[in-house]
Image (cartoon, rainbow, N blue to C red; front, top):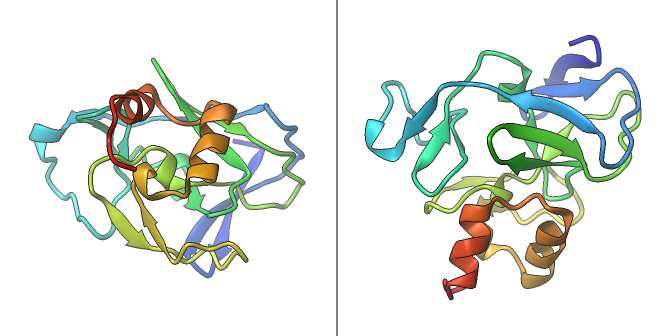
Length: 161
């Protein structure tokens, strides 16, 4: 974890890089126990949780490591690739001292939403499922390879966008 520093942000804790990461470079693996939607894990707070959707009906729980503290941004510098593992990659160059962020909407497809605190110029104010992203952003994220198959397949089956 020498490449990362946990610090305070206006959103709470955040993860900052202590070295430069180049576009396409692997950043960190997300860990945690995998849960099925029906498991309804104890302690799941709908408004404040660290459960990450990784499949149509599967989620990865908190790991008590830095992946729990990586914040959302409507203008992210990284994105998740969900497969056998859940891996975070830089989608642009990340400079030393910069906060690592990804767009939570890229993995959400279950009716979830939260108030956005990123304060970026292009902030959407509310973070919602992938289907609610503007079409141009959806296409950009799909082209970058940071939208999991369960979302891409549901989109291809004609799910209303």
